[in-house]
Every structure is written in structure tokens, then in C-alpha cells.
Image 1 (spheres, rainbow, N blue to C red):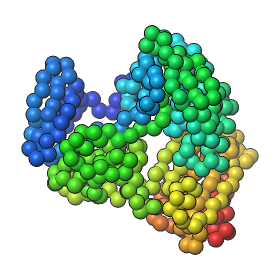
Image 2 (cartoon, one colour; image 1 turned 60 degrees about the horizontal axis):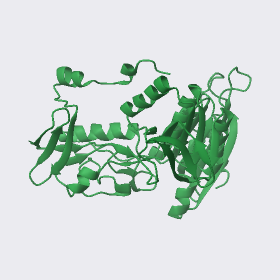
Image 3 (tube, rainbow, N blue to C red; image 1 turned 120 degrees about the vertical axis):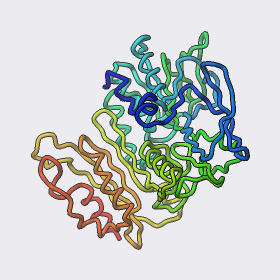
Image 4 (cartoon, rainbow, N blue to C red; image 1 turned 90 degrees about the horizontal axis):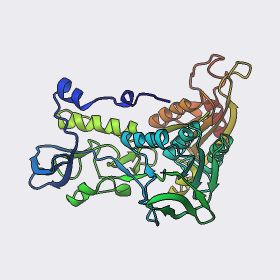
Length: 398
């Protein structure tokens, strides 16, 4: 939907250098961190040179890497992990220049679903393989089922509860995806199986790792090594609802963590208290959002909870463009404290998740939320906003 790739670049290396006085060195790779010596080994990729660069303060912001399954044929040409702008550009070029007809996506998370939409829009036959009963496992199964229905409605062939076994290849190029049930011909494959923290450098340097192998940091984004910091998809976070260490790879979290680390490295004082796991996505006409904890997580924690799910409209029913919206809310059984929420619906649905996210940050109960003074006008909402209807339903169960 975006014609010019340049419009996706927020800040260029030249802008860093000329306008911000930051020596941004592209095509340089750090291959080793020497914590005791306060230095990093740098390799200049286009000149085959290496040297040690000293530091007073070090920020590790190495991001995340796509999960690549250890199965036969995974290194064949035509199999792509999409986690950076450049990797997205490469997939776009393949579609533009090679004209593939059949794409298979492995995994039904955010990247997998958004790539499914993009490829359907380009006219490809798209199949999606997901080992869980529903796509979007960060939703409860009943809400994930709505997303599965939306995928199939736009022509995606969905294969649930199937496990990837490997890839058939010919002359080093992928030809098909093999699951435990079938073989799916493929001209290209997208790996949408999630990401893992890119923390190998930190681990090799003796810096302590935590949740899911992410770098352990305090609320100032400092590691357990003085003067060494970490932020973004390589760093651990903290969940404000469960009150436990948490890992999530989202741009909003990375941005905040980077800001906090920068303030502290520069001599200021800032903290990053944590997250509630808020995320939104879109699959063609259907918007998907979630925040807080889901039922599976609450059951693992052993917390008693109640839930309420309602179906409504994004606008007053008589107003043109009113679409369907399903809202689900979860609350602590005794106190009524909001614990999480999920939304699936048409245009105007997803950003309502911000009401629930704000309530989680504030520690509101569903009884308190029921009286929130939210805005109303027919083009934007029914008189009783769907979020309030959902929390009232939960409140009645307590």
C-alpha cells in the first residue's frame, strides 16, 4: 500500500550525522563485547577491517531474530523471515520481479497475518499453517476463532493444528511445505513463527539473560554490569499486571525503552516501569487488538477470574458504516480488578483497546470502568460504548 520505500525510513544515517551530531556507522558489525576492557570489536563489512573501539557507556540494541525451525530444507532459497525493513523490501522485490503464484506462511502471529493480507492483496494464492487450534495465540481461543474466520473469508487457505515437518527443495530452491498432514506447493514461504531476542553478543560477554533469553535490565534499562545498558527487542521487560518479568517484541516498547536508556546514559534520570502487552493488527477489513493477560496466562498463574464477552457495533446501528465488534474483558474474581481485554471487529474497533490498556495501567476495577465518561456521537460509537458494555457484563458476574 506504500509505493515509495523511502517514506518508511524515519531517520537516515545522513540526518543522524549532519543534524544530530551522531556518528552513525552503517555496514559495521560488532562481533565481540569486552566488558572488562570497556571495548567492542568492530568489523567494517565493506572493507574487511577489524579493530577495537573503546566505550564509557554501552547500549546493546541488537533487536530480535526470526525463529527459524530446525527442519530439512529450511535454508533453501525462497524462504523468508520478515523482521526488518530490508527483509520486507526483499520480499516485495520477489513479488514484483519474480511473480510467484503460491505463498505459504508458517505461523499465525502478527507478522504471519499481516503478510497474508499483503500477499492476498497482490493476488497470490495464500496458505497459512498454524500448529495451534486458532491463529493469533495471544488471543483466547474464542476470539482467535473470529480471526481465523476473517482469514478464510478473504481467501486464505488455513491449515490449523498442523505442524511443520520440513521443505521440499529443488536445486536449492523451495518447492513445497511439508506438514504432518499434507504437502503444500510453494513458490515462496514466509516464516511467521515469532522472534527471539538477539542476545548472543551479550551472553558471550557474560551479561546475564532472563525471560526467553532476553537481556536482564532494571527499570533504568541498565544490565547487571555497570555502564552497560540494553533496550528494545533484545531486552527483557516487566508485566504490570502479572508483576513478573516479561518479554515482548513490539516497536512501542522498544521506543520507550530506548528513550529511557538514552536519558540515563546522558546523565538524566528516567525509568521504564513496564508494559501490559498491548498490541493491534489488521487483516484486510478485520481489526484485532489485545492487552493484559489472557485466560491461559491467568490459569497458569492460578488466579481466579471472571470473563465477559459481548457483540456490538462500532457505530450507532442506523449510521452508515456501522460494523461488527466483539469485546472480551477479564477481571479478578474477588476484587474486580481488570486483568485483560481483547477486541476483534471492523473499522473503528481496534483502537478501543487503548481504553482497556489505560485502565490496566491505572489499576481500575471493572466497576470503576463502568462509569467512565467516554465520548459519544453516532459516527463513532453506540450510546453505550462496546468496551463499557463488556466491563459491565463482567462486573455483574462478580
